[in-house]
Amino acid sequence: MQLISCPWCGPREEVEFSYGGQAAVAYPEHPAALTDEQWARFVFFRDNPKGPFAERWVHAAGCRRWFTAVRDTRTHRFVSPSEVTS
Amino acid sequence: MADLPVPTLPWAHPLESRRARLEDVSAVRQELSAPVAAVDLRLDPAGAGPAAVAAVVGGPLPERPDTWTALPAGLALRLGPDEWLLTSSRARPEDWEFGVDEAALAHGGSAVDVSAQRTSLRLRGQRARDLLASCCALDLRPASFPRGRCAQTLLGQSAVLLVAHDTDDLQLFVRTSFAGYVADLLVDAAHDF
Image (cartoon, rainbow over all chains, first blue to last red; front, side, top):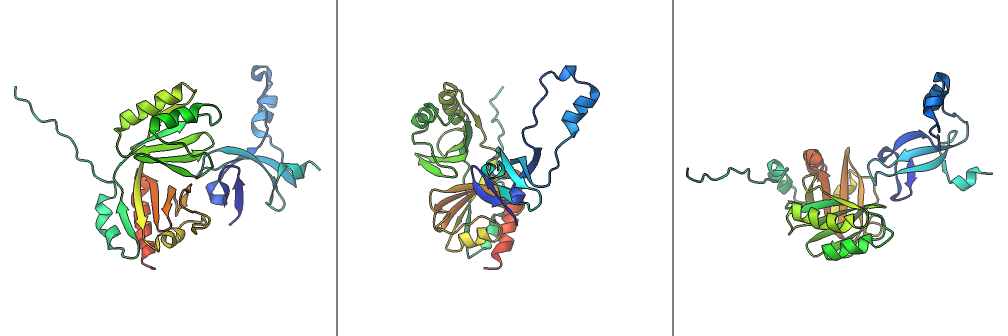
């Protein structure tokens, strides 16, 4: 089974984690001013890159903390954020 | 009117009905632990908060992730960056909560009584680690899980909190409603020993 490295608990099995979708999706500054389409874009539309993807994960069966991890969607390999900037 | 005695329900361990089956396992001694008062402490680890709580509970709070320290009558377990579980076998749950909460509140933290949340099982014997390892993915060898370590993880399908007291002495905290499942799992796994 794949191991995911929790920043607090260290490497743990994948089943202990839950997925939280794309990271750094900013809440609109003036939600009331958005059109329906703009709101739908914020609520439903997410990037789907082939390659490194910054995601939110929660260590549900461990320390119950949320963290951001960068995962390569082609290989499922977790890469450190510093690797993805190049 | 004559004073009638107030009927109270005697406390029973949630695994009382499984006591005989647990005792039947000869390879690993599995004991039902007595109930303890437990509070869940949320507190900023930086600053004077942890020291203030330590003065109230009578022992230092663990600083490193997934470790525990001994208190005069219980344990202080580090569950997360800003979360501890403090147990006491002597204090009444409401007093324990009140004392810790008062100290934490002054530093922006809080403490909540969770005594009824978990129940506990003590596993002793040379094969105790092998028995747990048969249904747990964590590396439980004494070198990587020595005395002083604790870990929240999965045992079978159930979330548990494992505490290493010694090489052949481990404690397992589990949600009361999952305790039956965990006990049955351990009894079943112990058939292989």
